[in-house]
Length: 420
Figure 1 (cartoon, helix red, strand yellow):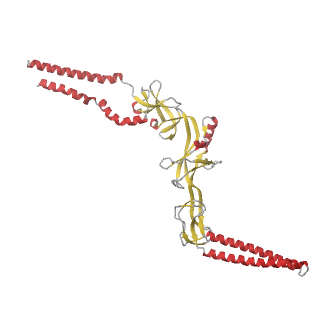
Figure 2 (figure 1 turned 135 degrees about the vertical axis):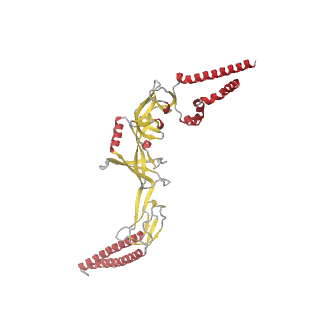
Figure 3 (figure 1 turned 60 degrees about the vertical axis):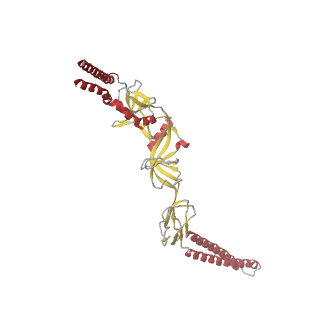
């Protein structure tokens, strides 16, 4: 009885092992016989209006720059302004010792008073001689001399009056003011310095920093190609808001305020073969500083049939750039492309794609040229959210053995019991 029970247990154990082995063979044979094509995320290329822009290097500069200079000779008595502050036109910046100019003004005013007194006496004398010459009481020569003396006295009054004006100007120049509104830089002289001797000594610089300008150059060949494309109808010219200019900081970020193109030079620089352009940007927070080298993106035309692809879809090699597409037959193919400028997370494709192609964005590592693939629409947000959950889900598929171990454990225990 006991022997027959052991035989039954051994038979049951062998049956379980055989069943597990059969199941394992079926699971192992399934991928080899009927493996489905891998899924890849694709985007369908759709041509649409695309602004043709060019990035060019340039340098920031103030709208207006004025050098503040000493216009009279004297000793700097006081610096009134705070270095680096914003000033209005006419604000006092320096004061030069005014005492010498006050004395000059007093002397000029005295000379004017003397000349005016002399002129008054000369006119009165000429007026008195007028009736006397008519009755021959005096000679004609005496009368003419009196009239000439009166005119000479009037001229001396005019000269004295000009001397007063000059003295007033010099006294005014002793108070140095800002010629324009803007930001004033560091002082180039200190109190006690002698300025204005022999030349107009620089004292400071005032620069209008709102708005700011960017001067940059573009190769003339590029300009001519764009004009030819617009004239041929391949591109459309831009105007108004489409012709906006974007400033790029040193870290590649965009300046929040759009600029406008002021002018394009009419002549080509013979040394560089480039055309000079200038753009203007508002600078309300004084973020832009004069002299800084930046890059500007200029919208110059519109491509009515422009094409872009996500940057992650592009592959680069020694032969150039290319993308993988899923063809109408469901097979993967490599398409060489010519890449233009970057637009956010997209690359502008100049040639190679015509529209309608299904470009692979996700799953490039799963496929190879000529192999079949299952195209599914690429959803960036869904793909980003699925990445954290995909790792745990891949564990059972990649390691089937641990899942089957618990099921095999009773069979091993039955076999050991049978041996016992």
